[in-house]
Image (spheres, rainbow, N blue to C red):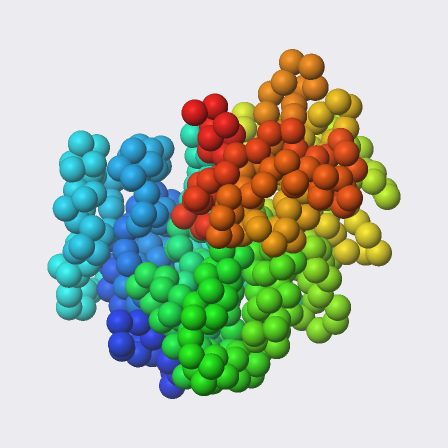
Length: 493
């Protein structure tokens, strides 16, 4: 039996999941996932690594389906609940899933796509009773999960992780972040992404902890849950913390005191999936008493670098490599560099197996000696890694300089008139690229003529944006991360 599933039998008296106003024990999770696995098998002995797509709302049903696919020997391919039909169709076509499990509420939406592809739709409401049969033994080296990249420049690629990869990711975080069966976490993250699936759901269930779900993120509801005092571990993206801060500031003073009191008693709060603005970190610390733990990871490898659970958490830094994960910085020739920026390259059991049916993309993503090339550029200062940005979108090459968009954004956010911003490089015949900034004003239009000299007092002149655009909001993906390619398009429309 898979280790994650086998561990559930160690916690017969504990609550595994809270969702929809109901609590579910670990034995109930084992029973439900077994029933789904047997239904998927339909008398067969093993699904033999066929992809099974599923579109299920967060909660007990989601985890039961995920585990059921794994226990039947299939590869789980979760569908994003908020994606438009063309994006869903791409996943179904790319995985060639012949079985799609859905919650009743999504059946009408997804069924036409499945019918066109000859895929069978299994509605959760129809999965009842106990079925007879035997589940296969699943080796940890088998394929377990296909998650799709954001696809900012090309069609999203399917990232294939084995059970061994997932176990390595989970175990490193259990150790680094001190998970235990006494923990209670709240999942507010999309469950088609490694952040929610591994860091929150899988880590909590591995530890024998309780994982609570809400249907859709609502900042006021989350603060009310915090005020109840049960949640002691919370993980989110910077956008969510920004929304929680705004919601807290709208509460009455007495409510603020109650919420802040509950927050101060929590054990751990983590931020990831996008750069955490120092301004957000500082404001959240003032509200909660917690300095957020920032870390670095991606779909292809789970987490690789983290600020310490105990010890200094440096603003603007993602910390040090996790145990069992090798990390190095390299130049464009894949030669390791010291005391200068370089691409982050990672090696370890946590690193994914392959891109689904894309051998050339897989090959080109690894060095000859087996290191995965993340495409992210960083620098190491006193042992701590600081992310400068993604080489394809956040590193701007202008007039011979390599400029970090993230560093400029951090300065812009300290301006009293700027609520948020995104810096990109725009193609330019003379400079190669010019720095451009999309700005979200805090209350009124920003005086751009005054902004330039203000910036020149804080950053070198070659980093100061040459073009500005004021917008009401920035384009973001389902994880709340700003999509830089879409920001660039704003300057051409």
